[in-house]
Image (tube, rainbow, N blue to C red; front, side, top):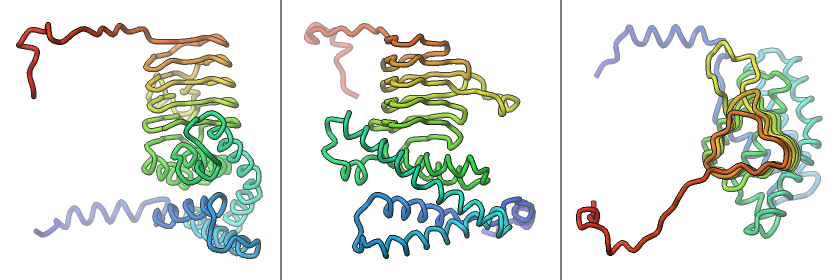
Length: 276
């Protein structure tokens, strides 16, 4: 089958006018993975000298990725310097996140287990490094990094969200946290939670569209909380499968009431007792 010249010309025109130029997503994912390993996982050579070499390699790779976007060596170096100057603080935040998981998840036996096996922690790590680059106004790269975590864990956290200390994601699959979400300290979120927008109109792009979650809130699985003016007060517990579009006062318990009946199925009509 021959591809039409018209299609080839359209694709060529689009690529020629791409404002970001070529961007290596594979190299980006590798950099994210290698930074995680250097920060948290045991390696064959854990000497300080080897760690220094590892960081030099990571700095070089980040420089190459950012330079692809900015095409300005001075600007690129400034961004790389800012990121690695912020890294000690990011590391301390992430250790607090990991300790929160260890403290509150009965299934977690050690920090090493959290680092090796917890997708919620990996997604939080990716969020924190992408958020730093987002704050530095590096284009495209933070979104590519955050989408890598989304593809690996099923957890979608926009790098523009603001998340406080000791953040705990349990299980995590299906969690969505929108761009203008603000989350306080010591918040726990379970699988299937959406912190989203009530209005997805493009005209609202520069407005506060996603909710505020104050300190020490727990949000159980399947809960949906929408709207930029929606605030969940501190120390509240949000039960599973609730739908919230209005403020919740501090220290509230919000739950969805449903009725479950259990009866002897031997009395069911024969027409209901079938196999598909």
